[in-house]
Length: 418
Image (cartoon, rainbow, N blue to C red; front, side, top):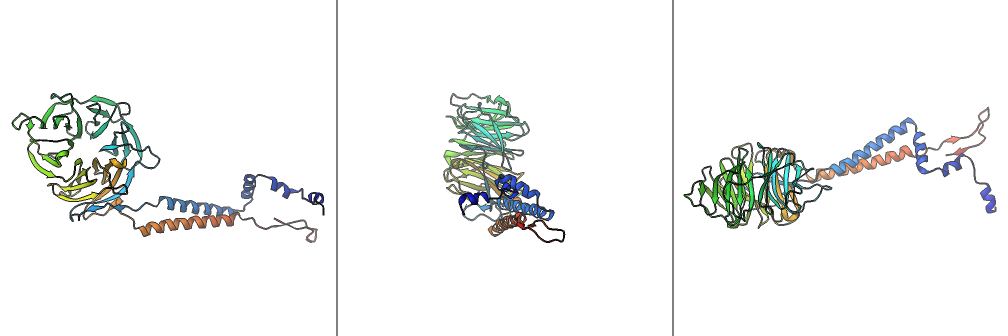
């Protein structure tokens, strides 16, 4: 048979027309032609596949224990690594330095990007504050009763105030004479009108003042012990400061110690730190005995856990870039609302989130799922996807139907399989 004869025998009927139609149209027509049982099966298949994908994707990662140096005391809280910020897809951090928590928000100074980043304590990015105003922001504090955010800036040599909406509210200028090298660094607010600021210029001191800048107490610097409102103590680069009850805690970094002063300004305690103390965070649980202090040690890349009396309980972290490991951490802050400890992991350009669990309490939202459970969840999700795909294939598979013409007595004259 010649090629022209074979071409002449190609069908020109409806089947030929179907072959020439685009596949989306053929699929649409095929779906329309499905009977009710097959449509129901297809819907179930899609639901199973979608559920399996969600189970695989949303299966939480295991919450891992943070490496410890030494054996923690039985009365000490347990810290577990939860996650790191920012989340994937959010703008990255350049150099996170200082941290503060207020309400449901976490505030992070990014000195490399000259801005304060704002995150929900649950993780998502929530905006920024101070772009175009700040130069090199360092530490910050949230004054909840005043509704302000206080930020120190090393290049501007100033303490700046911002409203809850991010509006710049000017500076806090101390009432005492400041030198040309005035360099505020650490800052804290007690929520009752007192603001403490460390000055790392040649004076190396701590000023405690009200919100208007009126200085009430001075620690360190050239002020003698007998001076009015002054406490004579030698400080060397006091980094951070924090109010805890009636006491004032100061991280005296280059002297490798933490100092504790009472409300009258008398020194209560001197705590030696092997490395360089930076940020301070105060951990409090429901029990009166659940009172600990977390200190960021930038030299050893660890978080030192102290009890309320200043005795070292254990150390967490250690140098590295993996989960729970740190690189020159600079600050820590505790959120009692969520039981989370946030760590400014400066060298790794991230903020780590650690869960805090107190002795005798359940892990609550931070209970780690065993890896076997997580693997089972992912396997179940994969099986659901496979079953959904198989069921969809069965529902969409073309049925072989007899189509033809019959005479009055039912004899088949022609038969075509589709």
